Length: 329
Ligand code: NAI
Image (cartoon, rainbow, N blue to C red; front, side, top):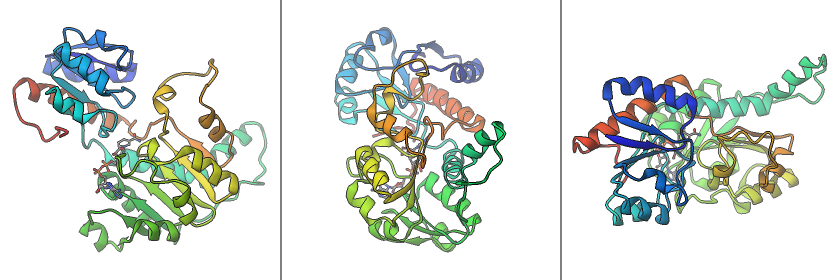
């Protein structure tokens, strides 16, 4: 089928072209992201293929429907950027890649923790400048620390298992409890109890109406003083302005984020020669105890290969009228 692929990056194009050799879909690549201003690019296409930085709000979806688009295929697990009420109203099917490599994201969360804690990024820069001092590089042992996890789905579970390997106590919160994790000594607690008991809290729940700004000033007050917060899930689960206040007060000891509330305007772009207009991220970048990565939790060879294979299968299933477990309803 003929598909307009939005927000295409060179590394994805290589994988999509390689695996499409057998599937033989007609893929037309656009670097532009999809939003209400760029829907004209999708004229003549039955399907659009999008990423987390594309904005599929009601206006965009109405325009796509009027142009004859019948399928939105996400190259991601999260689908918070799609207005599902609008897709239902306009009879557009939404498919996604629900699971490709939970380990990729879980391992990235661990990378954020270790970097923030053991300050390897600072040591690297120091040593390159001939400075071999260890002053101000002291970290803490992970062994026997309490790690809290919000959301024990695929990624949260993979993360819990890695942290168990470090000898951490794992305390979690989710409405659905995993017997597998419980058998390994993981304890399910209320959200407040997880915050109160954890030295490190890692967010692995989806962004929904319920979880938007779940981490606000009230939540930060409930956390241990000096605790570390890690977010590889979705930016808006944290209220960024409140996080900045908590960091300034020293209540929040460390913040590691792979996702950011306003990331669509910043992430996946080279802004090194531009003036960044987002004052909140500029403020975050100024803290020595904040580590920001540009939404690269998913970015491993294994994960990208899986994303592309499942994305192409989604096109084929739609074309053949096959019902798919990857449908977002
Ligand atoms: P999943 O659906 O397997 O697990 C999510 C878990 O969160 C479920 O167990 C669910 O019951 C729980 N949950 C929902 N609302 C909750 C709440 N209010 N409090 C506590 N738990 C709650 O999803 P998966 O695959 O583990 O992914 C989690 C999130 O990670 C995705 O929604 C996505 O936003 C993010 N993600 C980030 C990536 C990155 O590159 N940084 C890549 C892939 C996913």
